[in-house]
Image (cartoon, rainbow, N blue to C red):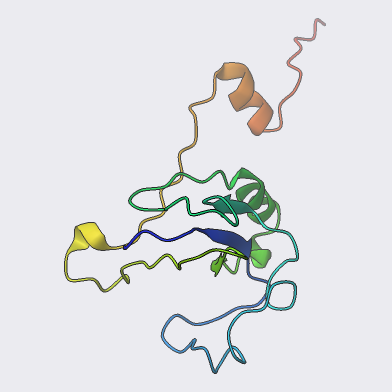
Length: 132
């Protein structure tokens, strides 16, 4: 709130502490490709347009979640960076917002796999019965 021109979600590459991380402690903010990966996980809003971003947004971050699943030590969270050429920043309520409904939320939805998918996720690709 209020609507802005969007943002980029980028994975951080170094640990940071919620209670002590500031603009100054991160040496004048977070720099793409230095404090983060060089690649962007998702863009919310259209770059260089006046398309507003307001309310709940859905973002596909499957690639990041899979990477973190393979290497949990690489999970330092995301930074939300402004879109280059955007006309207006997007602002968020903090996690300490008085109304719980205004606090930012991350909800990860994982589809319920069928039996074959569940077996594949468990590393079982072929089931055979041996005869003796």
